[in-house]
Amino acid sequence: MQRIDTKADAQRAIDIVTSGGIVLFPHDCGYGIVGGTEETTNTIFNTKQRGGHKRNTLVCDLETQRELHNVDQRTQDMIETIAFEHDLPIAAIAPYNPDHPFIKNLSPELLKGSTALGRINLFLNAGNFANELAARACEVGQILIASSANLTGTGQKFRLMDVQEEVRSIADLHIDYGLRKYHTYKRSATIINFATMEVVRMGACYEVIADILKRQFDVDIPADPGLKENPSGHLQEFALRDIVE
Image (cartoon, rainbow, N blue to C red; front, side, top):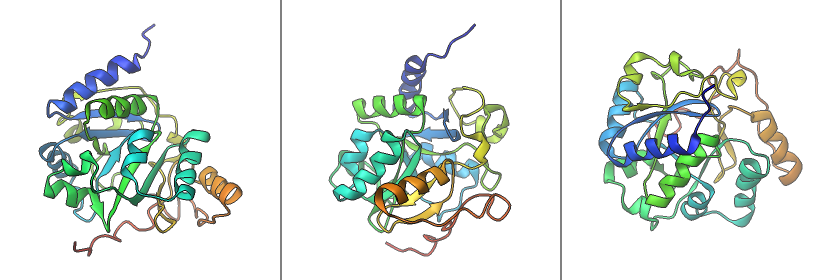
């Protein structure tokens, strides 16, 4: 029997990213693809045929999130309660610290593609491998710019074998951990804009997240109408299309 070695796999992956490569990786909500430079980001998004209105997602650990997000204590408590007390994946949008080294080291094009209205989207607690990768990235000061491993509009992929060949072919390393934990939701991670408390995407564990916010913080977010009514879960997919900064 072959066992998973998360630490060794994460080290291989961070070595690829820090050397300017691309990694196709598992997280609890599906498979993602990640790089750390403007060149790799452009390669990923051109291959995916991703719309220019979308912003990049940064995979990070709690330490990096605390440093990067500029939020009040209540907002930080909400994010940490969801991600770490309840052990759920969450993509959190919030105002960012412009003086953080990760932000300072972004090229103007990457900064434009990774932020909007003074906010940034950070993917937290995305599973054992993603968490290990994020921790190692923090140690070496490497930003992780990620997207779902699929052609745009074709839905999240929950097995590596289901990722289209066009996307698989651009990755220098594939990490295959089989069927992902939250495949039954048939969506990627839930995204919440904590600056406005608006839901950007209803995704994995959405009902649980909604319950936590209501019970512990008296915050109401919309009910999920279901996959038939909204397969992607997006509520604000094109909200940033006409933003000029």
